[in-house]
Image (tube, rainbow, N blue to C red; front, side, top):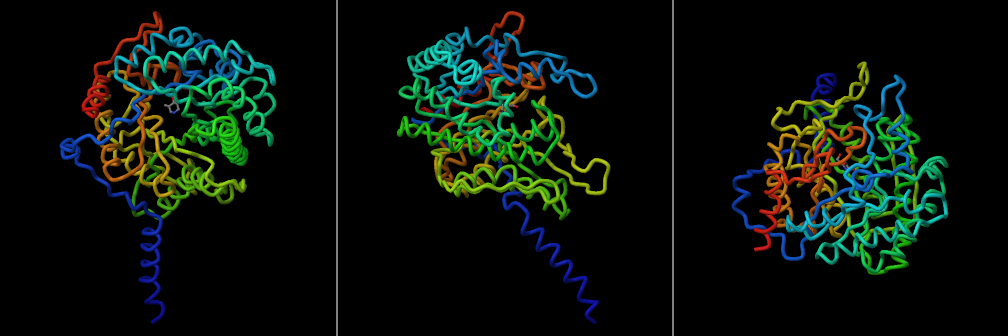
Length: 464
Ligand code: IFM
């Protein structure tokens, strides 16, 4: 008699767990034709920008860990960067920043997110190069003179060689070392720059560098990745505290990459739970840390790290970088334990192989808004699309979704397209082209892509 009850009981438990761990937004379907009929809601003060980072556009970043990585080879003797490419002179934005600012104006942009290169400002520990700071001050002045709000990122993946050699963010005192650099930058630029991003994508830096191996130092050690992740968040708090002491009015945020973690099948409990675990550790952990000061990273049997800063709410805004949805498959007994399943049709894929999923932007914004009501900036969103056949639709669909999020009361203050110009896409080299402007790397000429015209068209319409 009791045996007969076991099966229905198990079924109830199975579906109960599925319900518990399934993302409530999983069924979100948006009718883009209907969304097009809504008026734009962004308002006059909305920041319309584009984003870049120093190593990816400036040129001659020869004193950082990526410069070293670009000459390194992997265990099989293969170059770390696709086709053995090196960032080198890159897009030469260091010398062409005035031209690039003119290009922003032509697109009606009123904001620019860029990063300052730590290795140029502090080439040796404790020795600061005033001429590098002069340069960034000139960039800021040129932006302001053109009515473009600077948003400055203090750490975007690269470390000075001296810092890397000491162990970078594995070191316990790395947040203090980073904060000393931040102090110098803010003392110089703080009266002119209102918006600061402390660290770009802590989880990407930590896991690409220490678990997946695509970033320096290319280790495969999950516990170390968790320590680095923790120290990057601590570095955020150290930078936040330092900036606010110097410039209490400054707005300081952390930039979090947010992807949609989804099981390939909604009925596979193992995958559902596993994807929730990934999201909890890779996304939610940032917000629990920011709002409560508590950091917890835990993948049972593999890595566990926790920390309590005792400091709540050390942030003024959240920067969201949103690009794609990934379907993660977990096969504990398979040869490949962890895999990303690709079942999107080719027209839904970018040149990076990432699924184009605009609804995901709404879903990640909902998630962020469940942790905080502080302002949100979309600090990156864009597409690698060399043929330029998908860019216009990508931009329009993501902005329609963003418009809905604003309409639904989410506190969104700005959008930065990644990227202004084609650039050095880390281990992928120069082949992946995200730019609103195409860059001819032989001549460094910038040319507006047809698909990019959609962006200023929407900006102008939304301004009325
Ligand atoms: O190019 C990168 C950037 O440096 C960080 N966010 C994602 C972009 C595209 O991969």
